Image 1 (cartoon, helix red, strand yellow):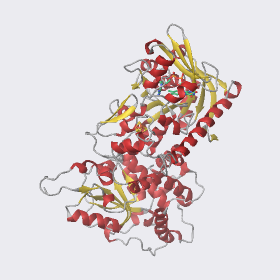
Image 2 (image 1 turned 45 degrees about the vertical axis):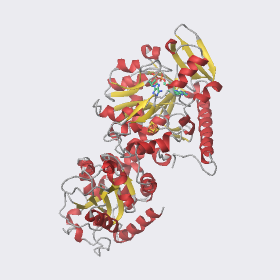
Image 3 (image 1 turned 180 degrees about the horizontal axis):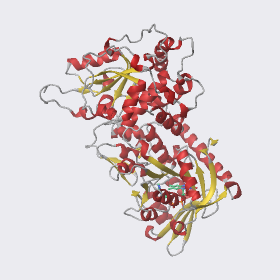
Image 4 (image 1 turned 90 degrees about the horizontal axis):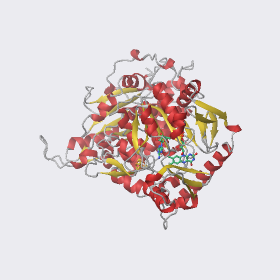
Length: 291
Length: 328
Ligand SMILES: Cc1cc2nc3c(=O)[nH]c(=O)nc-3n(C[C@H](O)[C@H](O)[C@H](O)COP(=O)(O)OP(=O)(O)OC[C@H]3O[C@@H](n4cnc5c(N)ncnc54)[C@H](O)[C@@H]3O)c2cc1C
Ligand code: SF4
């Protein structure tokens, strides 16, 4: 078990991608999330998974309890705006009757899940039913309207035209169905970020059973941290079943070094934000949620 | 923190009698280096409780040492607890019972249940280590007021169980007129009348939260140094809540999380709300305030109202400790 103040605890870290081309075709990176849920669903490790499904407007996600592989497919890809997946966690065990729930979410959503398991104030019968929580790396998230503004005002295209958005290599990328690729420097996107993200002290979803993101590995691949016993169990079964192609993280570029660098930057910056909040007014500060 | 020290002093006094046997008593929880997963080894289970004299709990002398040092597994290893029923719907007690077999384990291994109007024929509030108080206090009812005062005197630790006891909850909306005491119209959370040590909110509080708190309380009082540290860290946020006050509703979520620029749209508040008053519009929580019953579930479930890295980062070993403790 590696214990790292920025990268959290993990038993292994690899570069990986799904061996299923159909999954990769619509996934954001190496299709880790969709592949792992699909495997867990088929093996009965989970009864369903809460994912970011399609909503009423383009790229506006809505939490969805996926109980079929087809539904998992429909939720592939990153939507760079808020999808309150945790809001379905009790619903999944009640209205959907799931005994073993999967859920994907950003680091803060993993924190909400784990706090909820330890302090289930309003989460009756939920704590023992979380079977697989997959965390995705996250530097920041955006309100939906910020994304609309970035795509329509800055990237000058319509939301309906977009087939993929991505953040990587220091840029915000917008891909359209007619093949245009627009890149915006992150300098432009920063001010549109969700303010709550600026006090977040987790980059690589330290509390996921498994956590994954694009940073650290080549295009089309993902960096995967296997963290908990549950995570280890499902990951090794999925490996044995041939779900993933992997490479040691030491053998890929840019590797863990970049992940560590970005994690350190995020956490250091946000610690500073917390300090600034403490003396925000005149002899009055803003709240710090961490005790 | 003053309370912990107070608790430890109180119970160490008790433990003196426990630890006097010449042959080291096999009390596994007292071994210092036990890793958390083996917190409560299976040998604990066959307790010689049956040999206990059938003293009605309310007549039992609470903290005075029992002179019989031959008793290897002393009665005092359990904590005594009871349920004090103020103005509530008994839903909190039902939530406790909804631990099913887990409740039996709790009663078997950790807790002597000494007072409970619905279950035990004891008329007056006895001395006890932990009082779980359900319901708010009707200040127009002399007996209720006397009983809550009595509870504070008789219990070392007072836990406000559920949202009526912690925040008033649905009883905040009472205007009287109910037969057969129509003049009973004003209800207050217990923290407005007595000092409360631990909050355990929720309408009803989830069986798993009650379970977790019970196990943590036991480890705090009876565990080894590591377990005490873990239990202290776990209980700390719940012990800070009474200091914060007797109000928590969707408005508090607005004032302390959303308006403070801390919300990240995770959705925990909406999941926790027992009356489905919270929805997310474009990712952000919207509360239908007319539906809000002031239970405080959203506020307390939110990862941005209070959050302890010390505790939550150890979620896996804490859950394992609790699971091990709940092995029948
Ligand atoms: C807001 C945001 C910021 C991110 N920032 C980074 C970053 O800085 N560095 C990095 O390496 N990776 C980041 N990621 C993760 C990355 O974009 C991919 O989501 C991740 O690598 C998983 O890809 P995949 O191919 O394995 O998953 P896929 O198979 O494509 O599945 C992705 C899963 O994530 C779910 N999902 C999509 N959007 C959201 C959302 N908004 N909230 C919750 N769940 C969602 C989908 O429903 C789907 O189940 C971020 C993701 C999000 C949502
Ligand atoms: S639980 Fe807290 S952080 Fe999460 S959506 Fe609700 S208010 Fe925002």
